[in-house]
Length: 96
View 1 (cartoon, helix red, strand yellow):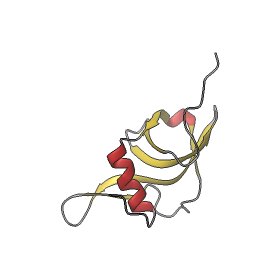
View 2 (cartoon, rainbow, N blue to C red):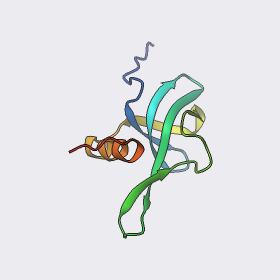
View 3 (tube, helix red, strand yellow):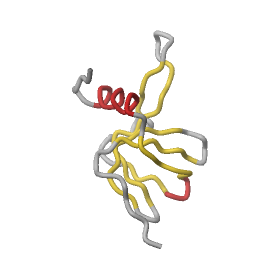
View 4 (cartoon, rainbow, N blue to C red):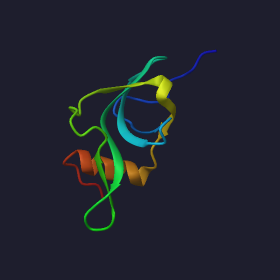
């Protein structure tokens, strides 16, 4: 069966891992063994009592992280509002 790749490089995706973690990231590529992403982040509580994005791996460089596909339950497009917040948090771009 031919599986089409619906993602383009730098699309914002949401990844659900076997651990239950939900990771937001920029898509780089994937194959049967690994999912490559950049700027991987998770939602976490902030000091103001709300929620914010923090790096998924605090000590890793943000460029490219390879995730073993055997630990990925699924990955899909991120809701537009959340993707916009991700872009604002990981770049200097401010979206209205």
